[in-house]
Length: 130
Image 1 (cartoon, rainbow, N blue to C red):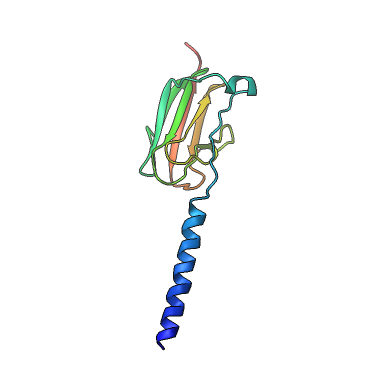
Image 2: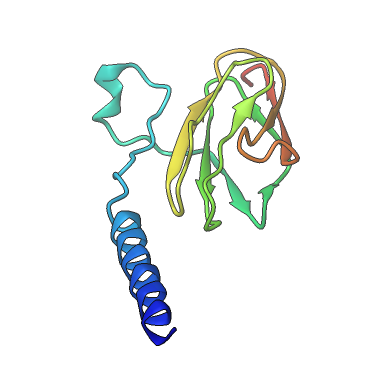
């Protein structure tokens, strides 16, 4: 009976070691912007920022003008996206402290969600340039 307990402890320990070593092998993902390839090498400054914190977009409702850039930054420990429900933009998954920029190209109201957590909702309203 004593040997069976040691056997299960050894198996559980081996499983735990494998699991921990796999979690440290996650690939490095880099967020991309919606800019053309030539523009990706140039630094892009955001006109405003939306923080993803506590499973919420802050601010949840944002108004910007055409040509302006909004930066999404995930400060949660879970991956999140900023995905327009009409497909206009999609950040892909952002890990902790990753950012993604979107430059508005046409006026409209764009509801968006986190595709990983669809209960997270926001709205980006794009106005004409002033």
